[in-house]
Length: 221
Image (tube, rainbow, N blue to C red; front, side, top):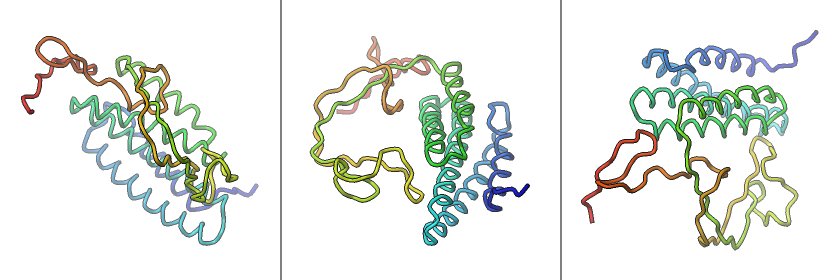
């Protein structure tokens, strides 16, 4: 049986397998930082390979490489999350966790070859529940004057592209133009879990929802 996996992707997969050894908190920080350098270099190689696929008009391969890019981003973010936690920087760690969750989901959208990442997403969701305290999320309601398609640059309501679908190595998204804020609300399931209440007012300052420490009020005007 012929293995259909392109040699470049095989090499990338081996790098991923090596880096996955450092997706736990107990690994030495210096080794995790070294793993970051490895996956960052791999991501650069993927970008170059994707540019070549695009120039050759090979959309399926370009989308496969887009998925590889997303996987690299997810790995980088998760390792950074563990490093930040060991440095007692939970707010930064939270942002990296969300980055890892979003990048993993994007990889599955990019190409069917990444459908197995559902298990990885469940693992990240478990980390969210077990490592971090419950969060209070916020979402903003906006009036949008024009929705621009990121793929063709035209009016999204009139073009044929679909948000979240891959097109020649890029995921389609909407670029909101001429926006004005209408309201901000507390929500259970936000579009972006980085939008949250980080602190709340208490006597003597503001309590950090992550650390539970009271941070002194700023004296700046």
